[in-house]
Length: 380
Image (cartoon, rainbow, N blue to C red; front, top):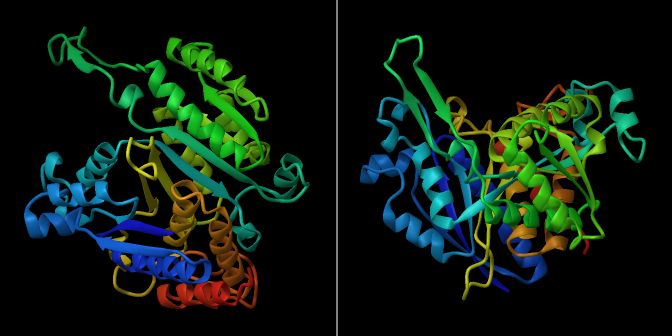
């Protein structure tokens, strides 16, 4: 099969880590009989420098013509003085809108090699894990384009007066809720078949609407165990018993907060991948998807062979799984990362956290090369 992938390296360490993810995808193509055609595009600060705008129209149009987008990172102190409409981060929002993605998938899993980096005690992790192991593996599905971040907002009264006020409105349509729920249910079907809707239905009318629609869809997905939890309880349960969760689905604002909380438990932000996906349009073979590590551009270490490439490589694995339905290939990439960590290799952000005396400090190049070696040696 042939797949076209838009590669947007971006700023800071973005070009370094996306290059390694491209190398891994090339090897996946060789091993499994696929062809990945890469189209490199400019967005973010680098695009501002060359064109004067963070997301050139040509970049967006070219990205829309591809089957998926692999993004490095955008932003940095060089462009912090620009007005909001010209900041590099506008490229990220513009790509999301232009691609029509609405569901953000943020996995959070504790790899055994990084156990000591997790702040939770063994007894907490073991008690909350169905298999009795000190670990967890969950996926947060966050609605990305609606809710309070995009609702009506404003201010009333005279500024400085006692009765002055400000407001932001949480509003969701049935279509917005239903489509992200279907993404979450489909993701749960590929995992451990459990879905938990997180809301504040005891207070918010919009949350009660989420529950009503979830209850309707649950009948269509009878093989998926559906449960409900208030967001304040979920925030507590993530640090009390994270192993109880499989897929969490929630609104934009709740997902924003909970996904950051969950990420702290994994050991390093350099290990965290994400995907933003949407509905397949008529005439297109694959649904739109944008895949990116969550670690940001980290300009202080750019060009120093210090960045952890694993989050970008894991993002590529998510692309294989969620855009192209190549589950076997995605698992092979994930296993190669585990194999490289088993050999003791650690980039700076994770070195010294496992307590192992056999750790080997590795740079961006060395860590990616180790993943590729394990993948090359893997028998399918």
